[in-house]
Length: 121
Image 1 (tube, rainbow, N blue to C red):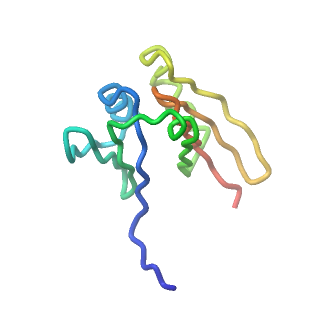
Image 2: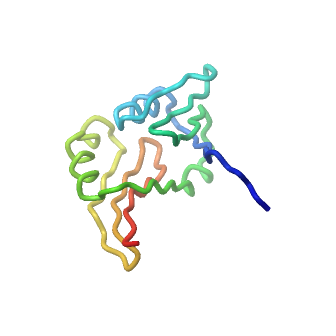
């Protein structure tokens, strides 16, 4: 099957929609408001949909992996944003080296776990 895909856009939820919108704008994503309860956040041709929807089991099991060109640079930029002091439940975890590459982690305001990774390949 030849998909000829252009993009993939996951849907993620939020416990506090306005707070999550602010968080993702602070991360540098551009917001496109689609409806009063859904926005599309994008950067350089990739993106995701943020919904005003909270289902604990769904949120607690949502992870998003964003491949970046330089995890060390990205880590420094994330640290400089000081998101943990602005958002009570946000947690930033330092870079971890793996056999396939390295990554750092960021929990968004409702607990979604973002992996920011760089492959060795």
